[in-house]
Amino acid sequence: MFTYAYKTITKSYILAEMEVRKLLHDPTELISRALQPILWLGIFGEALSKIRAIPTQGYTYLQFITPGILTQSVVFVAIFYGLYIIMDRDTGILQKLLVTPTPRLALVWGRMISAGVRGLSQAIIIFLFALVLHIQLHITFWSLLGVVLIIMLGAGFFTGLSMIIASIVKTRERFMGIGQVITQPLFFASNAIYPVSIMPRWLQVVANVNPLSYMVDGLRGLIVTGDMSKMPFDILVLAVATLIISIVSAWMYPKVVI
Image: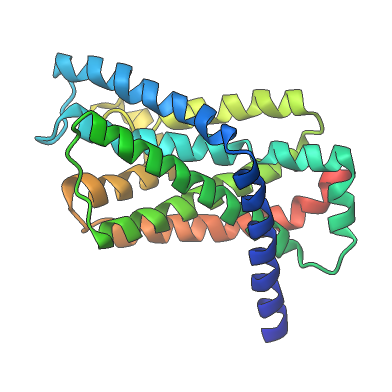
């Protein structure tokens, strides 16, 4: 058991390091993905902050929305990670990985970690842009550690979800369509851009079972309100959800090549 766990962890690290090297060799992807959160903060956030119709618990709307936009950026990166799996299958790389003795869970965790690293790069961009917009955030060493943890867990969950989709959907076009169908409802059915309290009752139920809401809630407590009372529960929900979906993804992973 110990040998399997050690092998899984080491192989996960190797696969994640390989994926991160791909990112370093092609940083243009980071620049292109930075455009969407900048537009949300710079245009949508600025415009809505003038209306003052959304209750934000005494904080400016730009402060309130920043964790939501950060979460959206991370989810958008992670949910399309399954696309790389389909591309690897089409080029034959995936088949070569599956015949190696590498544990299936390591193949999944490696992708999850690399998606988390990409999500952290998005966080750096958003924090820098928030500085340009003079958005006051609660940044400390411990809050940054919490941000890293939540981003890694959240990116891991949605990467696992995308890998499950990639195991079912066999073409890039269908995957892209399903990815859009999933990300948009999850984003708007969360507390990312407005509080859960102003939602209709049925939407509040959806928001309370939406993992994206727990990402936003945790990040908002860390970098905006400083309220850590819900933090253990937010992290527990994300950790359990990520662990469960990683196991399901590992079981579904070989089905990608079928």
